[in-house]
View 1 (cartoon, rainbow, N blue to C red):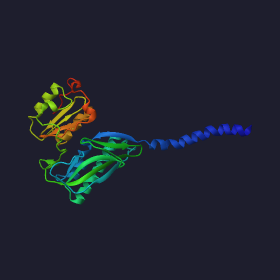
View 2 (cartoon, rainbow, N blue to C red):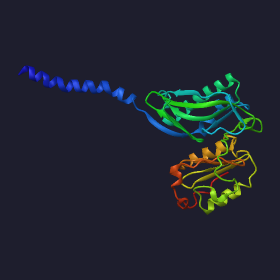
View 3 (cartoon, helix red, strand yellow):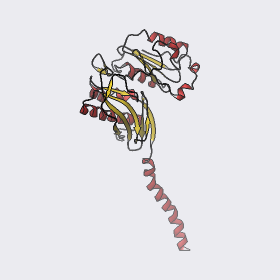
View 4 (cartoon, helix red, strand yellow):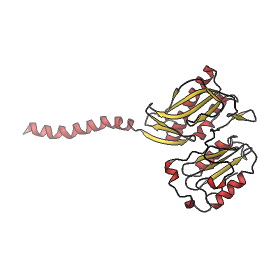
Length: 284
């Protein structure tokens, strides 16, 4: 009888002890996948300073014309840890730091190899699955760190993809061949008002960029930023404003005189006529 009583008391205690031992392990095993805009990390001061005025970085697997590849593939892993003392624990903030560290690694490899461009940059988490986008990157966040894996190629380019005014690097994907820059009817997701905004954007002087989103939102940027705290690059500026307004899947449509948009299968199924009224007219 005494033995059975001891067992009945010990069993719950053992279960509690086992649960408490497993709890940290389960928490640390969190692996949250995030798809985040490239623009916010690329515009950080550390990345801009590392790029200088002589080095280009181009996201997306397409390699622009006028580019000579110097390597097959290079890899970089960026990690960042939450700072619980300063309460910097937000996954998005940690991931942005991780991407910055990965980009700085790529830039270091480029400079050590004498390259003036890092092209074909895609996300490549754990070297398993490639995520190809000109505007987004993939980050995996857990309790102890955020991780960004990138794959790219080093290159020499004889065209200016990285700067305007000779000072500030630019986000300039290569031409996609999707449509002619002046073909207003081919711009996706826009209603009639949005097409009128695009027609007006075509009259703007460069540098300029036009961003569209799957919910009908758009943003146009050109020239010098109205706020000196904003990125000088109109493509980065337009993408940032698009995401800051909560638009869905912001994408560069055109930069300067080049259409750079690549339609996705999911986007192709959306009806352009569903763009919310009044949602389209946004810009500087």
